Length: 176
Image 1: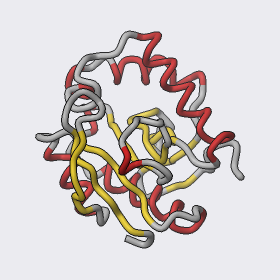
Image 2: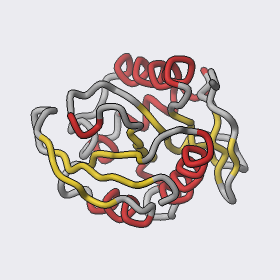
Image 3: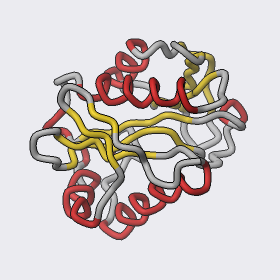
């Protein structure tokens, strides 16, 4: 079972473990209201952002999967984060299955990075995890994430209000 995120390279990205050097960029990304509009709804305070960064890294030794930093391959600078999680959200449709998620700095939207990164993540999951499917949640109105999910092979299976607001639930079978 991996205890650190393995390094995966794509055409433009390096998926890698987080580092202390990522702290300021990560905090700035999550302080941007554009990024949090559909993920929590409010910009995050620096201590909250940093705590979530550290807890995402903690998924690996506990679950054997987790989040990666999505870094620009040329500069190695964080431009997003995502991967596989288990957050115990209290949504019945997520129980017992890896949940995927992704977020990018708003200056990197619209360039296909989410699809590129998550294709690599799902390829890793298909090869390494014993899971018949993976799921994700998306806030209604987040059209960009819905398009990415569709490209990745996710299909809407329902919705939940367990988080205090409605989220749509999507599923993708192993292998897409």
